[in-house]
Image (tube, rainbow, N blue to C red; front, side, top):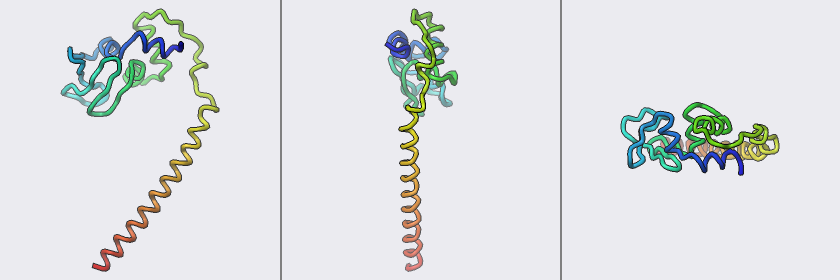
Length: 136
């Protein structure tokens, strides 16, 4: 079992939110710390989700966003803050390798292709509308 799985099994997003100072009501609703929120819009249980800004995830995601940490650092922080009996291993096991980034590069080329198609469609639509306006 990985570090992340062990932390997620031990700590819920609600427990993390309450531990870091977010007041969670009995129904699980709280004011979201990721945007200016005057009325509770975030539901926090095992996972959390803000209905206003769309942020969501588990306890590790919550901690990472709250403190601006990486996923690994957030998991490590939760282990330390909650005093969990989880052995934190070598970080290199959790870092991305160039092999993991290869699919991302292929996706970027697809994004560029889609963007070019959209720009082409926009030019065509603009041209059609201008001709229609001149015709009127």
